[in-house]
Length: 351
Ligand SMILES: NC(=O)c1ccc[n+]([C@@H]2O[C@H](COP(=O)([O-])OP(=O)(O)OC[C@H]3O[C@@H](n4cnc5c(N)ncnc54)[C@H](O)[C@@H]3O)[C@@H](O)[C@H]2O)c1
Ligand SMILES: [Zn+2]
Image (cartoon, protein in one colour):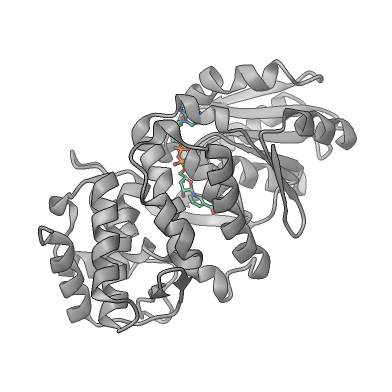
């Protein structure tokens, strides 16, 4: 059982009593739990067995494809049917899709009802549920419509990870590695020296990783500066993710980010910030966990065109968050096309 205090809310890890205490104190007019079919099956029973108050369930179809305004409309309509009001509580029980969308729906319904996050994937525990970014995809752009608003509280339960498919665990783990690379060298070395996921102290690992993200988002909630270091691996990673969408080589978010981190570590090396042996270590560690998929990278023109659509760009210039050294991230870095080309070649080269 652990607790992290953020600027405006608390994150509780493995503490069921804290959920009931929070709800009892809020004296809510009604409670709505948003789930998808997987969290309905695997996670809702634990929550339902514990809640002392009656609640209504809104079930949506799982998947990023459903993180859109149509699904929001369905949720808002069901909330009206259930008689929800501004004094109701919305509980988002799911991965990042439910957390981002459920938080957005709750924050906008009747100008905002309380919501709490119960993240059920590794990715949503160490990343999506912390920092208040909420929203949905729109017209093919990820997270285009949304707001930044913190939840009332976050309650994480590592028991939920027991039913998470291995590939989803690996995907979330990329953000754990990222947190080490940008903020904590020791954590990076510890987290990349693992052999398998079955014998790990997830409570401690989730705690350490969340603490890194929380310290960054507390300092810069609106991403004016420091928070951008969390985008390490994501400029190239998002482009690789988009390139492989709807193809047989489909990559999960973290799998794409893992490749992006190797290529962006190489950009950091080319800028003279990390050593050759460090970038080689990062590549070997990523390959050890994610394999070496050289066929997932688009050609340089496609990659640059995909990166040009990135929300982080400013005035048409592609901006990178790179490494000053292992354990220290930076941001607002410009790189040349040649440097990107060399980073593609570096990833493709057999080690
Ligand atoms: N707000 C942020 O700061 C932030 C940060 C990173 C990512 N995100 C967003 O998070 C989303 C990705 O989150 P995700 O990886 O959690 O995806 P997800 O929510 O789609 O969950 C992945 C899959 O796991 C299933 N699942 C969830 N919990 C389970 C459990 N305990 N057991 C078995 N299956 C379970 C889900 O039904 C889904 O099929 C993206 O939309 C991304 O944009 C947001
Ligand atoms: Zn990410």
